[in-house]
Length: 327
Image (tube, rainbow, N blue to C red; front, side, top):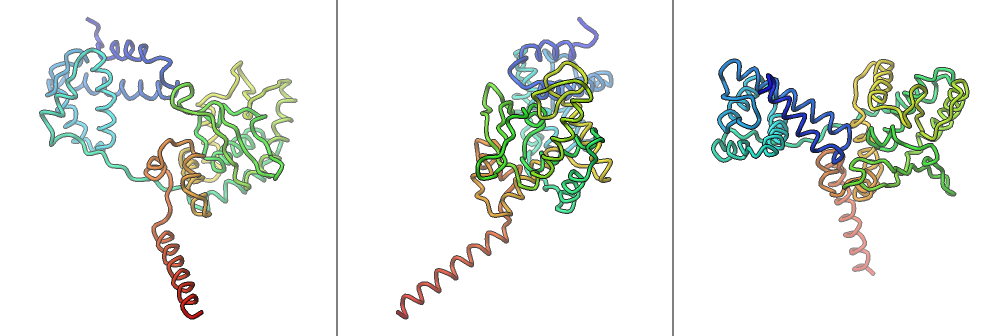
């Protein structure tokens, strides 16, 4: 038997899933499972669990794992995600310990709660877009970094969709409206569908500035590329996921604040709703199959705004009814 059975099992399990999930999802799940394996090794060494082999882990071992995570201040949502990943791994080896744990220790099951994270503050959105317009065309690194984050703010696109965007899929229509056609989307080839996203007009001057800098940089490098964010070094068609993170970090350092690209996505959605756009349209543009996903995780109409709109409509209706009676 291997010294690290949990790691060996992860490798075989992840190989069986290869091609069914995006590389980013596979890498993320592998990291989480490796961390779970490390915890089980530590618990096994301390005698807290009977095994650190996914084939032989028991429901009691799962309960000890959950208790250890809670004792160390890990949030229920994170533990619930751990159990989901662990169940997939153990089920692969015909070990249903996670289901047995849930049946035997119902009161110990972590309660998963959902609370929508806030969008980017308005002042930060304005600062980033203003800075994006003022970068020097000769400073390629900062121009590219600000263009990437600004496009995320103005389209709500996911990291994969940003980095795998084609230049000729960004265009103005006859009415002067800017769009991006997304071909490489989350869930590509399975549940994800290509979609067209309207770009907020705030990005139009940034686009002109970025395209000038992009043309200059490619000319200096003696390269051509069909990607909107071209890889200057290497042989790949697009920049890597790590590069998108590095570019985002450049903007973070410049503005002095931390944020995520998913905060940019929430900002696009909430900004569109606040501007009065229909929530169903916003949900479709974000690429969601269900409106509940949009409302739970990304954006929704402000409660006070909804109340005021209802009141105004009622008042208008009452006024019109009164006028008809008087007539």
